[in-house]
Amino acid sequence: MDSLPIQSKMDCSCMELALEGERQCKAGDCRTGVQFFEAAVQSGTDDLKTLSAIYSQLGNAYFYLQEYGKALEYHKLDLSLARTLGDKVGEAKASGNLGNTLKVLGKFDEAIACCNRHLEISRELEDKVGEARALYNLGNVYHAKGKHTGRCGDQDPGEFPLEVKESLQKAAEFYEGNLQIVREIGDKAAQGRACGNLGNTNYLLGNFSAAIRYHEERLAIAKEFGDKQAERRAYSNLGNAHIFLGEFDVAAEKYRKTLQIAKLLGDKALEAQACYSLGNTYTLLRDYEKAIEYHMRHLQIAQELTDRVGEGRACWSLGNAHTALGNHEDAMQFASQHLQISKEIGDETGQLTAQMNLADLRQVLGINGNVNQHSDEKDVGISRRPFRRHSMENMELMKLTPDKKGETGGARPKMNKFMKSASVAVEVDREKKEKLSTHEEMSEDSFFDLLSKFQSRRIDDQRCSFKPMESKPDSNGDQLKKDTDGEEFLDMVAGIQSSRMNDQRAELPRYPGLNSQEVISQYLHSQPTEEPDDAFFEMLMRCQGSRIEDQRSAMPPPRPAPTVPDEDFFSLIQKVQSSRLEEQRTTLPKLVPETTGKKKKK
Image 1: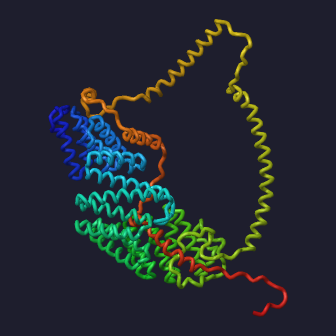
Image 2: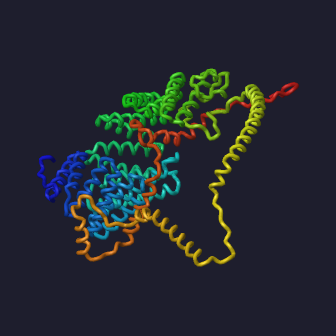
Image 3: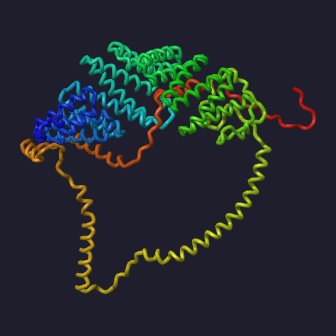
């Protein structure tokens, strides 16, 4: 840039910088491209269309760099300038870009308004490519909205609340519309994307057969283009869908394909994800030796990548598999590691689950329940005498989550003597505390009485009193004085409020990089006056509604887990294994009440 002439304010210099920025972005160096585009804005131009193109490119570059605030700023400038120029094509593209940015920021209603505007203009211009893009973007927004709304619950696919289902159904409708158009125009790559998204949406809706159909089509297109990443994703998604249909053998085959492609790509995180899925699938198939083999590989990669969440998941799974094989000592070791990692990463659910698993294993091994290896474990309720679950030899999985009633696979023995001694100690402490609390209450009352006496004068000084109006009419002089005082008060209020009022005044748009703002005025005077339509005002109102949301504090992002799939496999296992787990629970035999005399003959 130093080699450029001093004519930095000339249009040719601005154009050269913009073209170089575009070349850098196409080469994959968006950071350098942004620097050239920003330099082009600093150079300035009087060509409004050139400036609009720079805004659009800057918005896209910042979006790629995940600087969404900057991207939003430039896409808004692009939209405003396109509206000013009456450029319908530019307005449609800017609306679509703005909608995508708002979607990533979680402002779904504003994003839907922008994408709808993109769709309306594209249909008005009979632009099939633009219409397909708008439909695809709308599908993405509704899909993201549905997942965002349903992320707080633990529902399985197909069991989401009505609001989530409605968003996902809308997403499927827009994806279907997009797929129909791209098939008409023969865009194979777009067909693959639409099929993949339709498969994912139908999966969340619980339409697993439809999901498999779309993912199979996505897989065929990925193979046709040699897109290994898309092929891997298709195999993984097919495996998830077959799991919910109970076709575990088919799911294992799909996951093995996923593992082969991950190794071919040399991506350790993806390889670990495939091993995680395979390990849990073989657990469902009751092939625990293979399950342990894949989980050990997952654990090894998670340790290499310092993925503590992945390590915790691997230890959890290994503990379950060893328990199913009767290797209770090994299961204890992995359950202890799971507990330690859960504490480290602040996973309360993982801590509770690990403690429950450890309690069950101690019962099986006959370990004294009062031997507390972890300071915060509460094992007081564990029996001192060894107790073995009758179905432990056939057990497939440890309990993954606590029961609603707090059971861990069977009722635990009551410790009557312990409870009685504890109740006596509590009564003694209660009497002492009552005496102490009575004394403290008396001292607190005295303190507050003293405080109120000293503070009463200050409190009274802050009270406002009203003078009673006199019955006699005021004289002319008094009336004039009161009017003058009222005017002074209003002037004071107006002075205080003036800054707030000025902040709300509308200004003509100012575009950075435009050398002369008079260009806008001249252009507006030369064009016929045209009032914006209702759709534009609706979009504008929705976009302005995000200012209030900008002031809200966001929840902290979840801890990254590169070796664990986005579709956490334990939700799948819990759904499939729910009936099996219930069958494995045992209850302690009921105590027969002692009776005097002879026992009854059976």
